[in-house]
Image 1: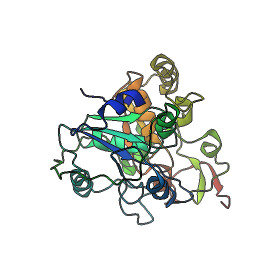
Image 2: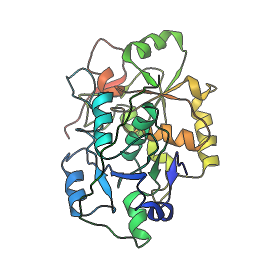
Image 3: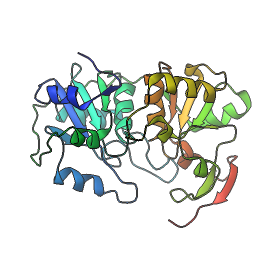
Length: 286
């Protein structure tokens, strides 16, 4: 069995003990980076390893490459291998934020040519709602080799800058409409968006229970925001390249594969005041 987008708690519970399945807890809070690890220690899904957004799912920042630059592929692969992830391993990621952080792991694995990865639909809340247990026991795994083979799914700032004139791809921003307009910005020093970008708030992919909406609904709504561009001519962005992955997952669920990621996103773009910015405003104190 290979799951490539979503799994529910029933399917995951049936495979918790399988040697060729690995579960990763990706809980995180941007305002309190230690919160996810504390939550993991207090209780997590049986067999789940923890991956931290800043330390594991991102690389070092230098003030010009955004808040969550992509991790070094080999270092990231070594971390996965230490948890027993190999080519045949089915990976499942979860969080407590509707998949906002779990989708980052989903995309990173696919970027490294590993398609056997899915997100737990509804996250830890869905697991608990179905009456399933948590544990404080830390997992162990036989180390494996995770080979690195990158796909050409990343767009850089120079590409986005050139596209302002060429219009070869459609840029879509996953942040909320207020931040897209340059309002209520408390994560980056400048509010606004990249000129010409469309807006699709990632939380619009979810229903009231925090699960992904039906594929047909997602397909209809994404088709509208794509504005005539084919999925392979679409680039997703957000504040720092994290929730953009949620839109990429939603497009995959919708049967619209092939979009790429602007990994640096707004936080990298706005680090240079010479770059054009729409609705540019000073950030508010957060």
